[in-house]
Length: 364
Image 1: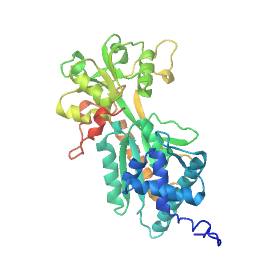
Image 2: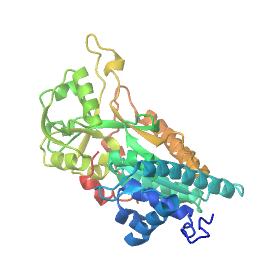
Image 3: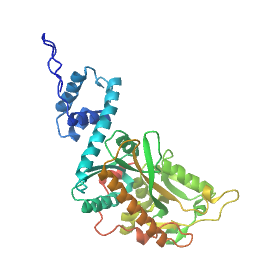
Image 4: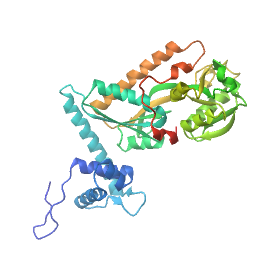
């Protein structure tokens, strides 16, 4: 690196900078914490602080407002952070490109997913990818929906898996797969013996729902209104696990994504009843919620304009491939107007990993 020393006894050589230092700095800004970034990078907190100090000495500006909690970058620090993210992303892509010249997939994939996608589902995809590409390295992390978005925007994750995906100025979203919604109830509930139920029949029924500020609650409410149904919401939670526990004690029924209840169906603590389509209500078309199936869409998000490595692109291709297979399987299972999977089909596959403990209190 350039020597900024003054022959008359001024400042000595500027501290050298390497890619690891830039990554540590980016992690400090993204995590808003010296200690958490230090832990992520396997160094001490004082070591992380020293990295920032060396960068500030080299640049001659303050990069972080240390007096603020949580930590925040200065104006110069924000510009440096955004530039470093691009440099790191470009280097990762270049490294992966060079490795791929030997026709090997040996790079890294960082995936952030919402808890309710299910450890068994994503782990299956990761295991399949690793079996195809043993030299690849996949890191899978489950986070709150907002943290998934932040991780992708800040470069801590290459891609994210979220429900109801939406593109923004900084995020590019693509549909991945639709999860059919089913009515879930306790084994002793009057609807437990039914093969299917219409949304209209839920009018006035006790229901355990999602918190009112969640997107999934808005979509369920729209579907219910379209079918002239107004259940009595007796409890509301921000996560699927809490809703399932309430339904198990027969506090009410719930509408949940079918893949999220496989464990309870196998244990016999919950019953799933598929939803059937109903005739369009006067003045409403199929596009307004009548005659269609109720689903929770999942999508893949990535940072807009950020180049993805060859390895990440391969992993996305695998997800798309599995989504197509899942869609074909559902088409075979669908009969007439029925839109959800029968309870027997929802049991987890033999050997599937148990859901992460962190999901117990995690938002949907």
